[in-house]
Length: 559
Image (tube, rainbow, N blue to C red; front, side, top):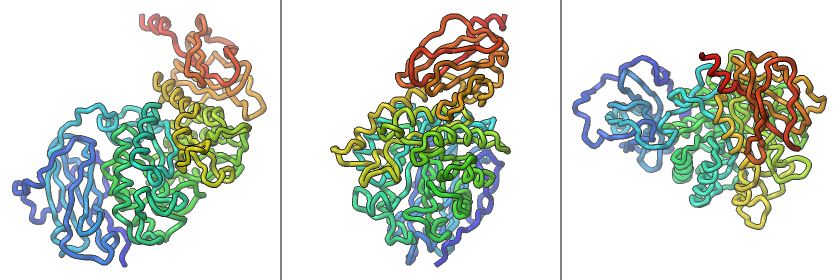
């Protein structure tokens, strides 16, 4: 059985110059009317193809490539996928309005239903209010320090771990989850494909593969899965799909893992999805091999790695080993749960993000998993999930992903809140209860605070803090803009913060922000840009200090 990937004629991204589609039998004025379809920019479009030949395993035995050519010579290349019976599908999300042409090439050239099929799509501008469809697929930002929408607008990553939810949640439950997370201003959800720990079937009783070796997928399962991804996009949420190198269990043979990766990527080719081969694993060459298979299937989606947490290490060794792989667009790190060691959690969220931020050549950094809130007493609390988010953001990362629920070895059998989708209403971490935990609301406060600022200009500047305590769990963090017109500091539980203000060129307006209640507390007068400034929080607990060039000072400089 042949499972190797066919190479592209040319691997390109959307902005490269035009290349010609195969000229064989092309007569673009004779395209059948049934294939002159319409779409909107950045919304998922699809077309069904009917195979004229039968295969023992159509999932693996035949390969369909598709090329798209649009206005201004823009080109896209990907594959089609088998969707049951004699049906194959091709999908796309078109980046610009205008007439797009497509043509297929099948590994079985005798299959007239799959080979040299052609059509056109008349793409109109999207007119709705969905931010994703208005602004386009994510990409690396201009400075390579942050992620951005397709139109260049910086993308503010506040993620949520719902690993097993697409498999375990009903459609009604999934819609309720999405409505809550969008209301709380999350922007990303992170899910796995068909993890064995989540159960042998989905809520409809469908198995993901016909057998455990993942040699052939069950289209019914993946149709339900993709509907949940599509629904997430329709509510404005980007989906990070992790674990493509282990679609059911760890770890299949590389050809099978790469075959699955190609198929799931092209099934979701028209969706706002980010792909990660790894899911909470140590560094593995397999993850890079699968990453290359993903890149071959898409030039328009971001790829990262969601590594595990190296135990009590001073550096993020797994992330660093993946860092220079060319197919990875941004660096994922898991600062981790660390078996409940709060000092390790704090250290990793600060030091690991700083190390990755300083690594060259620069890539955006996202903390994809930290200590969850599990309603604990000496850890696993709201403050732990919350504080690690602030430490992450002010230590060089451009995104943070929150989690609700216990994890091994702390997790009791059947628990796991959202990531394992606990369905027993009597349990403390029943998924509907976990949605409303205070820490989730505090992620909204984190998002809304950053959304009022040009957060993408912030750079770590912890050295400006002059009274850093020895206890790492009380380490304060500070980031400021290169122009020194904006700075943000986080105090975990400190009585005062002393900041070297000589780094700022002009007096500053200052305010405190309460990350627990989401409220500002004003500070009277301007802060002089000289010497050391002492700032005392207005209450106990953790606080955020915001320093900005005052509007009055800005007007004076303009005059």
